[in-house]
Image (cartoon, rainbow, N blue to C red):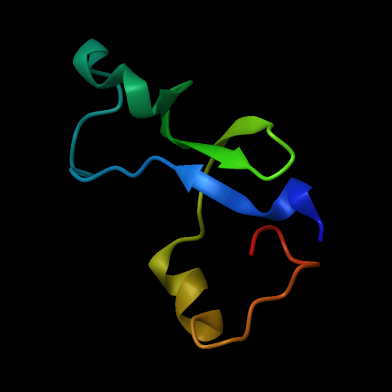
Amino acid sequence: MKPSTKIIQGDWIWHANRDVTNKRHIWHNYKGKNRMVMLFGDTHAEFYQFLTTTQMNPIAGDMPDINWKWW
């Protein structure tokens, strides 16, 4: 169901304090902004920016919703 929003695998920034302008940290950098490469169920991959902690906290306990950005 809705494979275009189902995350199958993804990357994560373990050291989020790294400078995004440093060429050594280019893997998590897209135009100077932190992004993660995510693979979705329909086999497309994209640079993805997850919600901030402030944005995520209110919805953290919600049940998965296949009509949302990812589930």
